[in-house]
Image 1: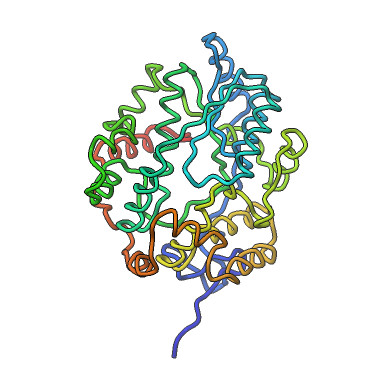
Image 2: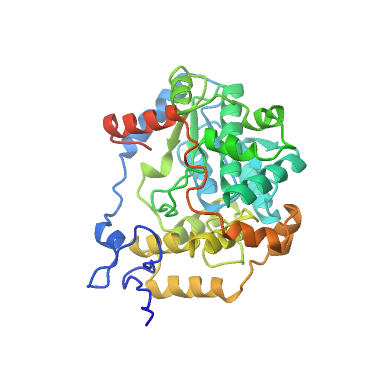
Length: 367
């Protein structure tokens, strides 16, 4: 007789997810281990800002903006609250929706800041996405690397002392041990495509020999701006509270695609979640919603409704668009579903491994 899959009685994680353990009391280990995030001190953030101002550069900081909630909120804080002189930039990943682009234009205009668009050749970026997808089962590593590398290049070019990131401490991990941003791993995957030569790879990576150690040294010597996750220093507002502020102050418009819109700005997000659900049995929405429950942003009932509404449609709303853009067939999807977890994980940067271990040992604040 088949046994039913247990689901946590406090969040919506279930036992199918690797690392999730549900006790006899019906509560998962993530809920039991949960501790509300205690912000670093705003006074420390103010010191960072003053140090940047003292350098008397053209811009105090670079703010990457995607048109979503968190990056728009960071821009609002940087300009409207902390009065920094800001340069903004956006990496067009080839899957940006029109609403996100409009939100960026409104936010830039509202703040009166300069803005830079970065856009790779669409044929190349789609070929990179497709290669990563059919060989490793995901595409987000390409996008994330493109965002980071262009961000560093702009920071270097404009000599910005800071890069203000929109990462939120309330977002949980995606429960996969695949290191999708490791450059050594990424190169090994891309090289499976004989139509993509080293020159094309290096053009995309911008810094083809970069690793955690060299990136740290370039930051310390001022070549790159110092990355600062602003939201880690401040009292955390809920997803809805942030939305209300930027609607009022930045003319931001919310997507009507979902009640939870943290990543609505990317048209590939629903498709990548669909693929992840096929490979792992769950999408990243499950841990995100569960973390929102623990943070008391939404109730368990609300999270379940959102997740069940997601499941009502077997295919994401932009499925055909993604399939066409990436030149995929249904047979490709069937093969992608079979890709094992941790594929290519033996391909990793030794410098990154050493740096990550050392940093955890010597530095309490790794954000």
